[in-house]
Length: 396
Image 1 (cartoon, rainbow, N blue to C red):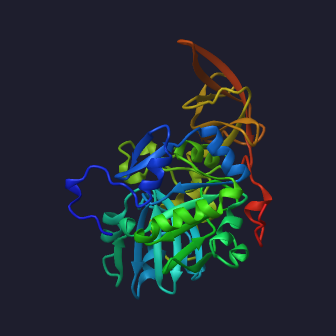
Image 2: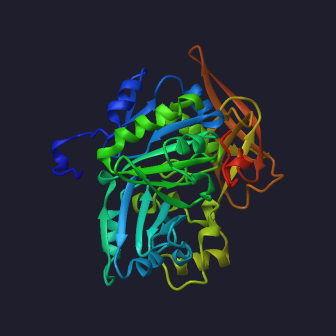
Image 3: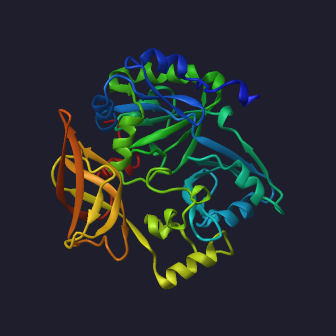
């Protein structure tokens, strides 16, 4: 379904809204890219518990989606993306970033190589204008198909069992970042082993007309597997535990930054692995080569912070009380049993063993308190269960 005359509607409802609205006992919502999206349904802690101990469903429909096809689709994407898109074979998904000419990240996202020469680029921010400008000289078709695809994230240890229950035979053999297609309710259901929780999980893609059929089937077959709906608050805890970054939270998209020191490069977001200098020219290549030669300005780190007060928006200090970084995301981790955070540090700070302190303010009964909490740099994700990568996936 295409949404025309955007100016006549302030906020859209996703194809799953008849079910999500009935389940949202808290009536807690926010606007995500012109769609009504649930913050939480009944209790954030219990929704999070479903992610880690059973399975939880998140309405992913508002995520921006771009369909890119045509004879030059691969060449076009390889010109824009820092990694080598040719290595993302048909039936696979690749995490990626794209930069401006100064080597600063415009956005991160995923490239779905649906079928030979047919790609879908998913991102936090809308990129249609930037993609269209960049397509000059390439024989490609670029369409934003956000409204034409209903999508759900099904995440948690029992997610595979639920999918098998709705008829996705063999889905347990799908490898991480793989894509498979199944017949469902007279149409095609695409399943990708992807997600934003750092756990065993899948994303489901279907035409909007069959969205409610998919929701109902999942909750019918998932009843004995602890299935629950989840909102963005529970998802936020899980994604920080996984160490995943988010645009507008952990970095400012370069095309929206006014001050030059507010944007970040892939190296400054701990994403240097996504930069492939062995391939031909791509946006920001020259600037990134120069940064590699002279060094970066910042370093993204994962911190384990003493105490149990989340260090949201905290400054990070050295032993001489100099500000050397800023926390971008912070939560208490129920799975790691730790006070965790992502932070952007001034170089050369942020190495394991550095003496770091977080300045945390918190309020109790209308009184503000300040604590200086010791920080420890953590290498890798805070929570990374083996089931995330295990193939075949177990039922649990």
